[in-house]
Amino acid sequence: MKDMPCLPTRLRRLRHLPVIRELVQETFIQPTDLILPLFIKAGIKNNEPISSMPGHFQFALQGLTKEIKEIKSLGLNAIMIFGVPEKKDALGSDSFSDHGIMQQAIKIIKDTEPELLVISDICLCQYTSHGHCGFINDKTGRPDIDNDKTLALLQKQVISHAKAGTDMLAPSGMIDGMIAAIRNALDEEGFEHLPTLSYSVKYASSMYGPFREATEGAPKFGDRKTHQIDPANGDIAFREAALDLEEGADMLMVKPAHTYLDVIYRLKQAYPGVPLGAYHPSGEFAMIKAAAEKGWLDEKKAALEVLTSIKRAGADFILTYFAKQFCKWYQD
Image (cartoon, rainbow, N blue to C red):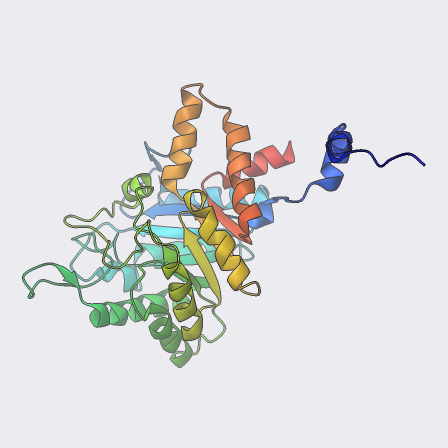
């Protein structure tokens, strides 16, 4: 009887033909694994390109129907929408107005493609005149977010989105107690069926620059380190996730994704039964785009490798600005 072939020899044989490689491939991505972020801006008549995010736009309400039909035709089943209001104030009033940009957009999207899952971003930063994620209390001598007043504003925001017809709420501000406050408000208003996707693990990252251009929501002063996680800390992610689950979160999310694969992996190991999303943010997207424009790497190969690594780490679904491109690659 011949000796068993050594492991390297067997592995080489498994890589010999593409069909064989596909048979033993461990991680797969398909369009239904991806969610496309979408920006809608009030007060414009034509879609405006986002300079730091090639291929992406701030969409006018008039241009939204065409985009939504294209998204659905590509095989995508879900989008997350972000609104850019025409006017801002200290409370972020447009975020909970019945005639706000998000409320108008939700109705247009659901009228156009009722089966497309619409996830509403729930935060105040792009609606406030100061650019922070909540109500600012400046009586302390320094600008601090008033947590309780912010929760009251978020409750008004989710109810207005629910009434407009959104399918899911995604609170992104990392405000203490936001899931419990949102869940209570939704349940009291008869929206018990609407789930929440919590940005339970959101780091105070440098990877959000292009996104802030897209939403016009950069803070006018200070930063968000008091309520987002220090990039040096990993264990706190589990405490944040545990709190959100106790408060009633239906799904969890890690942002950024590519630079926090270890956190994604550890969270999935800790909570295997909880749907886990990962946000491949604007900065990580822009780096690949910029390097590809310089000819320093192959854009398609790099994007697919990064998305695969996020899925391999444990993400059940990925929010990514490569979603439409991926669908075209997938169809090819």
